[in-house]
Length: 385
Ligand SMILES: NC(=O)c1ccc[n+]([C@@H]2O[C@H](COP(=O)([O-])OP(=O)(O)OC[C@H]3O[C@@H](n4cnc5c(N)ncnc54)[C@H](O)[C@@H]3O)[C@@H](O)[C@H]2O)c1
Ligand SMILES: [Zn+2]
Image (cartoon, rainbow, N blue to C red; front, side):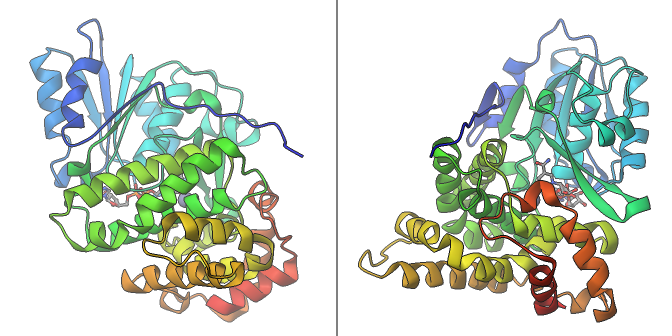
């Protein structure tokens, strides 16, 4: 039986080779104050130069908040938001990866003193949009530019959590491949596999539906057929534009469906060991897909038919599904992303801590088509320890 499903999306999306120049048409002279959220890496890569020039040419007052740390905890996010509140801004531009966009999205609903990030950890729906937002992703990526989610770490609990509030969905999005041109390969690879996980998890989620499947499959197609070229060839602008589009579509799929056990079991690795989000997902992708295979092989076979160029339609469901999982594994290896936790000095004695923390991420575990018991989680973590 078909369950109810819905989709909320950013209202205005600009994409393509010179999409960034569209900022000119988005900005209005009536704007009193614009705040650019970004971080040091993006500043260093010169990625806010064009937005700055356009703001200056239009004579719009702006300031820059650039101290956002990678994968911030909720205290750090609050510090940035407190700084932002002093500016009395009426427009936010986020130029950055998921870390920057997530803080900017929180700022857009926490611009008054009514609530704090901590309040939203208890009740994410408390706050309403106060400031219009434009998201310009520089990784491809988290898809945060499409989602109502903001992920923060809770250091006291050594966990990361997702604050989900539809009011955080961006008003404007710009997808421009030039912004990921100089992305260092390890970051391009890990963030690209994060987008791949979003697509395949949403397509194999209990919440999957006709709308999310449309976006998830197109995302998977774009990502699997462009990720290697985009990450290894600095000049491959078409592949990079395709990756940005794919990660955006995967974000849209998240909004209507949801990620599953890869993301659920990955959260403690970020929360406790500070392993980058994309890397921890890449480590868990193949083991979780193998575990899920009995419940998702029909979906994997459909994905094969859609994404494998020159594939053999006569293969059995089992063969197609195995091919897809092997392909995920091959992509992670080709991109030289770690496939185990050994590199991160996670001792085997931590196994029970990981199992307990992973099993707490029920928000995503309920989306997994095969039930994950503590014993299953233990076996999956053991495979990668
Ligand atoms: N809100 C969502 O829907 C959602 C979804 C998935 C993940 N996330 C969260 O997003 C965060 C991760 O975001 P991310 O993977 O995009 O990485 P990130 O934003 O943490 O950036 C990683 C590093 O890459 C650098 N960088 C980014 N773009 C660059 C560029 N174009 N050139 C040079 N350097 C660049 C940054 O300076 C930073 O040092 C995590 O906190 C994760 O939990 C959010
Ligand atoms: Zn993710």
